Structures are given as C-alpha cells and as structure tokens.
Length: 102
View (tube, rainbow, N blue to C red):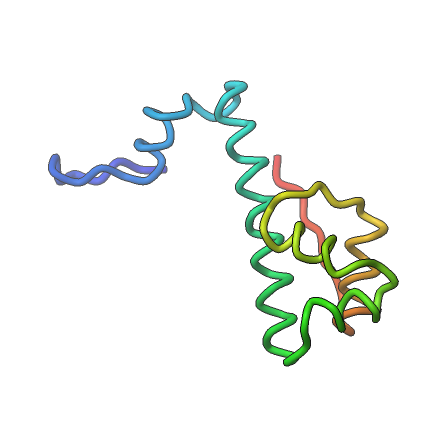
C-alpha cells in the first residue's frame, strides 16, 4: 500500500506492521487468519439477522446445534468447509464464492 504524504497520518498497514510484523511474518499471518475467521462469523450473523432467523432456527435448518452457530459467530470455533457450505446453502439459502489471492 502506498504511503500517504502527510507525515501526521499513519496507515492501517503501518499499524499492523508495527504491532504484528510485516506480511509474511508468522505473527502477522496468524493475525490475518484470525481476522478472516472473525469476518466469516460476522458475515454469517449478518445474513442470519437479515433473514430474521435465530441461531436455533439456523442450526435446525443445517443440522447442527445452536451452540455451534454461536461459537462460529463469536469467532470461538474453527469451521469445516463442508459445514460452512451447509450453513450457507441449507441454513441461509445462499451461495458461497471463494477467491484466492497470491
């Protein structure tokens, strides 16, 4: 990311570099992975609330437990790809797109 010419402004990347190291370093990669898991939980929660269904209803639709949905939404549980697809397709009636950035 480009540095902004104003010396009083610190970019988000600079803050991350300072706190977690540069991209590619172990501590930074761990933070990036945890952040992606957090975003996934937020996306599921937002979709569920947009549909007006509870965690219990979502769990019933996709054959899991309310506590598991809660753990996913609160970033307290890893999720298998097959389970994620079932939550999105059966539970939320949606479709999932995956991209890979190198």
